[in-house]
Structures are given as structure tokens and as C-alpha cells.
Length: 261
Length: 342
Image 1: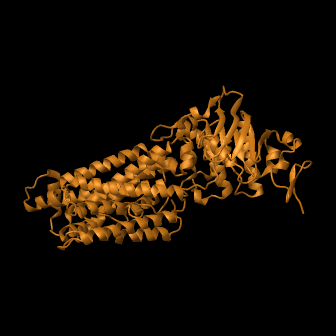
Image 2: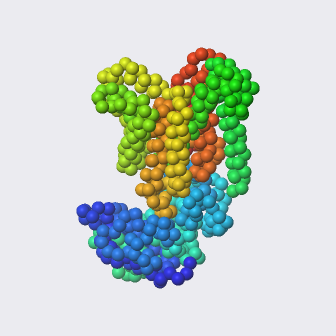
């Protein structure tokens, strides 16, 4: 896709939360994302990472502030339009365990198909390409209940790729995976973001890997959120404020957290 | 995916053939022996010149067989819609208490009408449909509301069970106060029956089936999307609120109107979608909807053949037969692990 403005996502002075009558979960969030960046959202549990993602994919409105996607205010998008711009990969397990991998990935084509959802040759090409990119072609005929967590996560990523949106939002894509498979998924995502010009925004607890792999990060703390490159954030000591200091501290030199004995 | 499509076409052709055979068998068999030849003659020429036999075929057996087809396919489709909507393999019109809701509506109409002076239209089939459909909608809405609060499928089933209890409690109170005649009518209704429907009532049922099917067909993409859950469905362009309303409307119209005319028929709605999923090895609703309709019709015809005890005078209540056949199917599906997967 061409012709996107340089900053594909613009967020300014946004407060997030579910209920306007209660105090906001996160306040004063502001950042701008360039096309094809690979961005991690980090912060402690309950800080509002998922809430921010839900706000960005239009499920809940921001309590305050402005979000634009491709230069157009988020609230002006219809559900169908937004489905062509933003795709998601959630944390919840697939509910229909009997679904075949090919059918699951094919669902990503829904925004592009007619009312009966009949797949055209182009749709099949997109599905096959998504399976190739995620190295899951060999799984196409399997059912979801036959997949390991790592395989399933890749298939869900393939579904988002088949949706062919410039932006992919992911809620903790590596949660159920061991260290090896987690890194494998993150590397794959980074590679796809580069080769396919996708803007990928994901939340994670794996701060060490995010520092090594991401172009930018959003560090969410109770008071404020900070956006920058991993180096800038380390220099500004933004990771130190992430957690209470009684058990772990951030080591600037190695870019990792150390346990305090 | 050509391999699958070819298999599906063969399966559909076989099912259509099976449906035709079951339809003719259902007409040919009954308490009065009618030679197969006469059955064919009556069916093909549409005349009753073979005297009593022709009369029996056109006035009793054909309406009953058509009722069985509409009721079997409608209940099964309703079950499929509920299983997808709730993403719950155990959902179905009977299990979720939707049939109980319809019973409540029917009970209030049949028995409650005798208690209020201005009630008139007890025997009006249209009011019976409206009352039962209202009852099933109310329960479906309530279950839906609670399903959004809890993701636990067990909780959902218990809620359905509770609705069943509340219904039977209200029905007991009503029956305590109502006339013997009305009570008898309600009990006979609750045993389920395919045989007493007039051509006019069959017309109304067919209309309800068409309406339910219409809402299903316009939701077919949303139904597929819902297999991944509401969040994903919405992210793929489905207007969830609208889709939910359409699906509930379809399931409610189907289960409500069928229960109104034929009584609460158990297990068909739950078991048939699973059989279809097993047979066709797919979750795609474009295949599942016609497969469920066909299988539901065939199963109901078979149940009806068993219920009328060929060669005997008696006819067994259809609800007993569907339970005797349906319950083991569900147990078998549960027994073979992964088969009950949704």
C-alpha cells in the first residue's frame, strides 16, 4: 500500500478507561507512529496496556484526546472501514477448536469478500502468502485443537496478515510461549513488519527482548507514558519507574532487569 | 481446497437422496397398511382416487411428513445458531431453556386464558405462535444477557436449567388453577406431536422457517466470524450488535414457532449440528447451514417412522423418541473425545 501519511497512528493527550464516571486508567498518552515500525507497549500488570489497545482498535472510545489513523480521526471510521486498516491478534484462545487452520486464516479476508464470504482467487493468494510468511503452510489442513501454543500464535498472526491491513495490534503475542518460541515469534513479526511494510504495535512483559528488537517503545507508568527508541528510554531512565524498587532494578549497562537479593 | 468441495457435493447428494427415501418411507408406513405402489400413485398423481388410502395419504401422512421436515430442520438450524452465538457445544433450544420459554408462553395462553374473562383466541394458531415465540425470545435475551457477564459455559447451562425449573413451577401453578380440559390440552401439547397440523398451520411453520433462514443467510459471514469470538468478529468488520440481534431473532422465531405447534421437542437441536460437523468436517456456515437443515429433516422423519410404530394402532409421543435417539448421540459424541469440540 502506498500513499500513507508518514505518521500512520497519531495519539495526542488521550485518556483511556471503560467508564467516563470513574478515574481514567491511563492519562496524557501521546505518541506518533511511523509506517512500518515495530513497537512494544510495556508496563506493569493493570497499567492499561490492553485498554490502550482496545482504544486503538476502536472497541472502546478514548475518554479524552484525539486518535487518528492514516490521518483520519478514529471515530470517523465505520466498523467495515476500520477492518481494512487495523487487524488484531488477541490473548484469548480460539473458541472454535474444530476450526481448520486454512479456514481460520481465510476469515481474515472477511472485510474484502462479498456478503456470502466467497473467496476469490486473490483471496486465496492472500491466504497462501500469509501462511508462507508465518511458515505455517504445513499446518493448513490441521484443526486448531491439534496445534501447540506457538503454532496457534503463528496461525493467528497469519490470519491478521491475510486481513491485509497496514496496522496490526497485538495483545501479548508471546504470553503462553517459552523463551525460544517467544523470541521466534517476535523476530518473525519484526521481519514481517519490515518486508510487508506493516506497522505492528504489541504489548509485552518481555522488556529485554523488546529493547533489543523494537524501533520504538511506549513505557506506561501510573503517572505518565513515555515514547521513544529503546536507547532514548534507557538514557532517560524510563524503565526504572516501571516497577516498585523492592525486588528488581533496571541495569542500564546490560539493558536488563536484575533481581535485588 | 477442491478435495473438500467435491466430498461435500457427494455428501449433499447422498443426503438429498436419503431425505427422499425417508420422506416416502414415512408416508408409506403407519398404523394402516398402504401398499408402496399406491403411495407412489397418490404422490405422483396427487389424486385420491384410491379411496380411503388416498385420503389418509393426503390428509394425514403427507402433512405429517412435511411437518417433520420443517420441524427437524428448523430446530436443528436453531441449535446451530445458538451453538455459534454462544460458542458452546452444548447449546440448543432445549438445553438453554428456550423451549421452556416457549412452553411458558403456550401454557399461559392455553391454561391462563381460562382464568381471565376477556381471553378469546385460545385455539387461534397465530396467537399460540406469538405467545411461544415471545416466551422463547424472553429466555434467549435473558440467557444472552447473562452470557455476556460470564464466559463459563457451565454457568450458561445451569442458567438454562434454572429457566426450565421456573417454567415448570409456573406451569404447575397454572395447571393447579386451570380447567381439566385446558390442562389436558397443555399436557398433550407438551408431549410433542407432528401429526395434528393442518395445511394452514404447516404454511405458518414454513413461513417461520423461511424467515429464520433469511436472517441466518444474511448473517452467514458474521456467524463464521463469531467462531473466533466477538472481538475478532468485530475486528473483521462485523457489526456485533446487529449480528447478535439477527441471530437471536432467527433462533427465537425457529424454536418459538416450532415449539408452539409441535411441543417442546428435545435433543434434535443439540445433536444434529454436531452430526453435521462430524460428517462434513467443517465449521463453515455456508456448508453447515444446508447440512444441518438436511440432517435435521432426515433425523426427524426417522424419529416419526419409529414413533408411529408401523403395523400398530398406537402412536408414541414424538418427544420420547427424539430423546431416546438423541440422548445416546450426544453421549456418544461426548464419549469420543474431541468430537464434541465446537
